[in-house]
Image 1 (cartoon, helix red, strand yellow):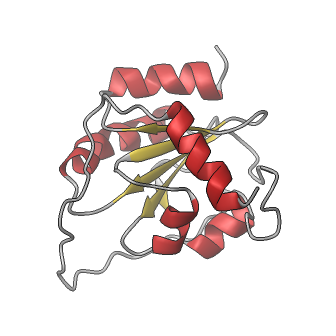
Image 2: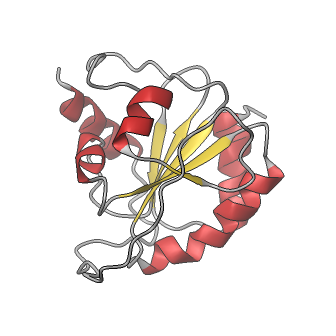
Length: 164
């Protein structure tokens, strides 16, 4: 089974289709650029923007291991697949920033701009955004789609990532 099928299945099985999400909205074609922060071993006090290269090196190298999930991180993580033009993505951004500070040293929160990292978004079968990939230290990741209030995001961190 190839990687694309595995992750498409993952998205379909655990997708949260009843939540608000951006689907089929037009891209903002401005020439605006956002700097990408390289993933480091330091504790993040804010979500860290990552590229495909960062992802392959620090999260999961799906090119080298297409049939088996092997998390490369040192603590649980959330990957926020988003776009600058997406209203619900903008709504959850402040909550993710607050949670990154609150859980600094316990989890990592990363952001992937689906407009700039289209290959990475396709590899995970991203159809609607925001899409949050919760990656526990052990077990398979879980993809949840749609904007959630901070208290629900926190509950998912506690139950999926920290197993409380």
